[in-house]
Image 1: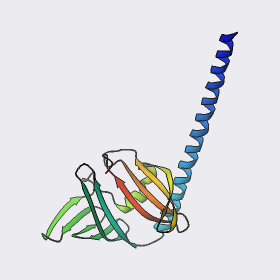
Image 2: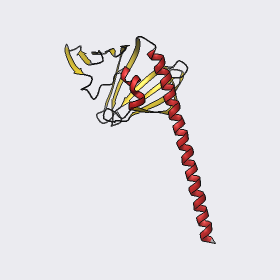
Image 3: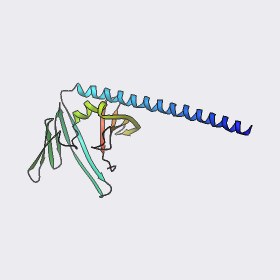
Image 4: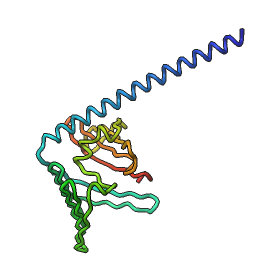
Length: 186
């Protein structure tokens, strides 16, 4: 009799755990679907622009090396081409080649987009996110007095970086903040 009760309790517990995991799985799948849909809406809005300009703030944090460096600048995007003007450097790309001009030294470094594992172009992220990244909601945030949705994009091939986080203004359908994290969490 005692053994039957224990078996019944085990069965009830297993059923509960199974139902709970299915419910959680469905909620996560729905959340991921909503994140992809929101991102799709933002991308469609941005794709309607022939070009755009955005202020940017670049912060590099490396805890291991005690680095916390912040730079500001501006980015201009037109199709696959972009130009980033930031303190100390200008980065220009036509979608195939990247030219990095270091102002202090007058030096120009040239690299091919295809050869560079580190290259992340604005257009590439926006047009290939669905096939190259897994989108999921992280949390709601308040940023510059706006309610924003944080969407994490995790690359399916983690050679380049660990994840990207986007803060999306759902009312304006704009990306307010964009962060890239390397494999060390920096």
